[in-house]
Length: 453
Image 1 (cartoon, rainbow, N blue to C red):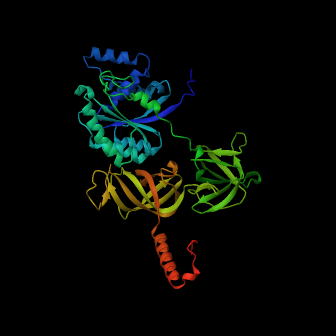
Image 2 (cartoon, rainbow, N blue to C red):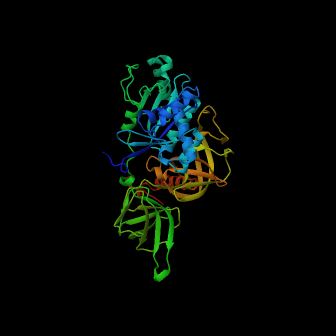
Image 3 (cartoon, rainbow, N blue to C red):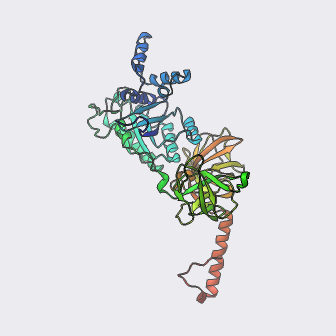
């Protein structure tokens, strides 16, 4: 039997348009996996019978929310269910705005998602928006539950039509669901056991599909990266150490390793790994808050990223990026205005340079702004060069937040770094210069050699 404290946990988000059955699906998972507090289900059914109300599984969420407000027990108030494999912690997603704010705040990190679509209404605008949100947040493990098929007598053609439409839309976003599952959340069909009413569906149930998902692989095997949060200097008892501190977001580093700070490009060897009230360490790895002393004394600022000099770190230094962005500000995102751009421990001013695409408004060629709740692909110009990465190369160095007047107004993921205007001018000048030199002095150049100014 698994140790209660060592059981694996997975954070998931279950989202869907209003009245598409998300709450009913969550209620069913809680009830059918015996994840409710003892007597909760029977108590609620009895209360409904006494009050002449029809019991709905969605009511279980309201009951648990009431307990949370009354401060009864944390475990019963948390929305979670369990299988034989693991516990699932559900990130509450009452709407796309709340969902995004929760994700941006870092309070929870979903590694998988369930998108619920009502077979009666079909693919709604919010169904598309939720798909885009998952794409922008980099959640790749997705299952789509097409709900309320009982209202159509479990007709396969209804399921296929919605599946084909939504699958085609998600392909544009580069989101490939691992499963489309026909369900009736109210009747409990294909939730934890296969439904005999749908013999045409031979795939896994909702719970079986979730159990086939994996927690994101550890960042330990990726390249080493640590955003520098602070440099501490002590002066007591002739202690003149400088401790370079931060939380390692990926990879591993050891004493003696040669490290480089970006964007300053300064290098030094790790002299010691600092610990507080703990045994001395020879190495430090991903997700550990760490402090280092260096053999060579260098001056670097907060916000730089420390990497290993001999490692193929997929980190760029740039002041211009192409990104997928979700805007939440009350005022639109506009050109020619400064915003605060936060990535890791780096904070720089930012301006919108170009809007390349807006979800739901692809027919318009030139967008003047990005309004509240709109999502799009944009080019952003930063006031200073910072170290960053494509989200798909390193999630921690590729996910950012935008702040305006102390309020988080947007966020998204970096698709790629771009050359800034000065670099483009320099590159163009170099190309023209070498072309001219090659024309007049061809014997001076070897085609197998790369020349730089």
